[in-house]
Length: 178
Image (cartoon, rainbow, N blue to C red; front, side, top):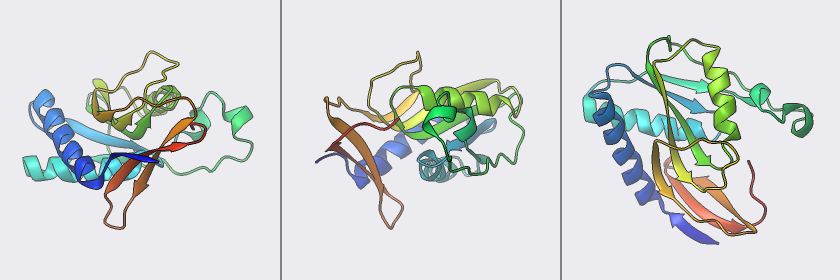
């Protein structure tokens, strides 16, 4: 097991991403965050807090469950754990930043975009992740990432959340999950 992002580096990276989002959007006025359930939810909450600290205003925060939008839902999820999507704001015409913990094949993000479009047509959709591990199967890339890591054959990326809500990322032996 090898630590690739410790909790302090994760926090610095989230603050850096918050600054980049605000800079690109020229403020936080039309920015909203949507965390992809499960792994993206705590990252999105920390990112929302970082943007609020930078800009002095809250950004709308939503949560998106993509279980039924996955392209393997019928075969890989015989008894899927369904959560609720909670997007308590209009996405129409907004700058939406999807947030997840790990970007791997791109299939989760594709499903999230499909699910998000059921709520309306955002002006733009961007992607922020804690770690980009490569291995894409679809032409999807992160607009913001705390770190890109090279993952060897037989390794997987694990994201752990501490009691304080900080995150650490480790490379461990075993098959990757998508």
